[in-house]
Amino acid sequence: MKLRDLLSVENKKRLNASDAKNEQLSRKDWEEIMGTKRDTYSRISGRIRRN
Image 1 (cartoon, rainbow, N blue to C red):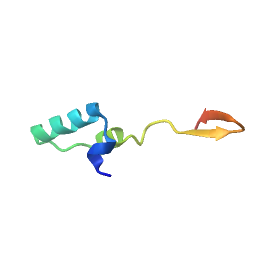
Image 2 (image 1 turned 45 degrees about the vertical axis):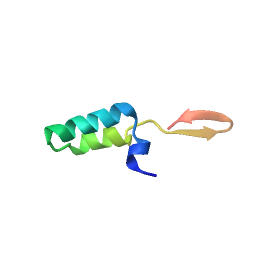
Image 3 (image 1 turned 90 degrees about the vertical axis):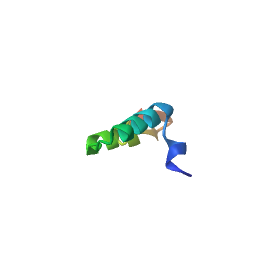
Image 4 (image 1 turned 135 degrees about the horizontal axis):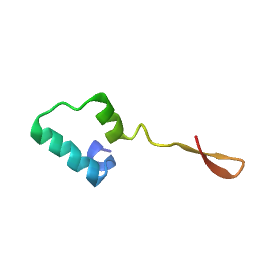
């Protein structure tokens, strides 16, 4: 599976726009694009809860 298959359309546009400007993305921008700051959910005693 390629990276382009995992990214949403909005994130692809942002990535291509930054590439066209030829600027470096900060670590915070990369984390946001890759989704590491998203909420995680787990099943606890039958309920789905946010961690």
